[in-house]
View 1 (cartoon, rainbow, N blue to C red):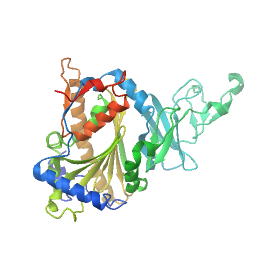
View 2 (view 1 turned 180 degrees about the horizontal axis):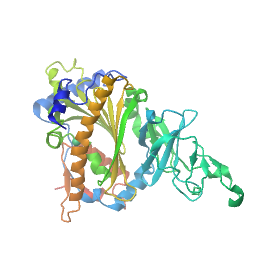
View 3 (view 1 turned 90 degrees about the vertical axis):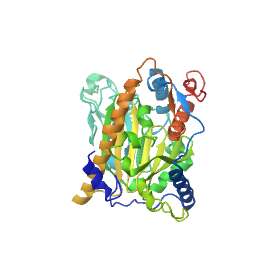
View 4 (view 1 turned 120 degrees about the vertical axis):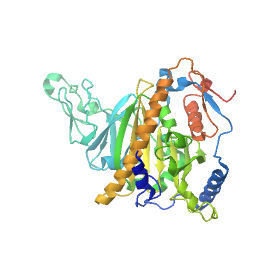
Length: 423
Ligand code: FES
Ligand SMILES: [Fe+2]
């Protein structure tokens, strides 16, 4: 990011600002808004933040051990819905996306009846990937090997030279379907054919209601980019759960616009919400908290279990997802989406969203991702002592608490023994 980028955005109150308006009005109910305002104003005055009771120590193997990755795959990713797209990315019938999830390459396809199906990207003959394209629109998926053809719903339509192949019951040789649900304008998948899916159940009543209030189904995915990096997925995710590093790692980019190390946390269990604030909140900081309207000054962050951070910025949403590699704990893919309240049509609108996108990528790719890669390399130091999460890294502590629980706590094979609050 250059100084001119910062200057260009200062006039509109900081990075990520446009004249766009959210589809729903202020989303903090009046009572919560007063609580948040009081707490955030006090934190800014006193240089404090919502925090955990104690420091949490943990062993670096959490980021490097392939046995932990295998357990995460089995106990988390094989049982829990994860976000794979915004609905607008597959808006038309037969639009498809190819999605890599741990242990499965999945096709997500918009159906003629408006629904969405997800199926393994693997031919039922000898297993070839039906497509290597990441997205597109297809009336038919034709296998490149022997040209068996499948419909957009995964049904096996045609077997070449069928008389010579032998008897095939086409009805039972469709593509293998995996659980898929569209909810809150997002497409969720579990890459395990035997799992049952309930997005509402996974979100829990609080976050489910919050997300319903955001009306995300009316938004448009302005851009999506994916980054494969030599980093454990949790290390990447951890970089998006604290705002302690903004002033330091992002000193040359977005730090001037945000209060560092200051956040309000709603611990909702597996899913949590945090509120952090821009410096611009100083405009209202000395007013009566009961009258404060926070909407344009704060960012609402949501830890969407197990691997997503949804940020509600004052004018739009940003969605970050962190996907483990199937086998290598030191590899992951991060996807970034900018969700705009309306399609960008005029050159002026496009320019504004492009500026937002540029700033977002410069901050994340040049700073967060680069830092995480060097951090992952440091995990190979053989005499590394336990790492720690400070009391101020509360959302990270919540994530690791839920991770310990999801992987079986202190039962055999669990990871509780890798964590400690005792010094
Ligand atoms: S592997 Fe697909 S047609 Fe043979
Ligand atoms: Fe960051």
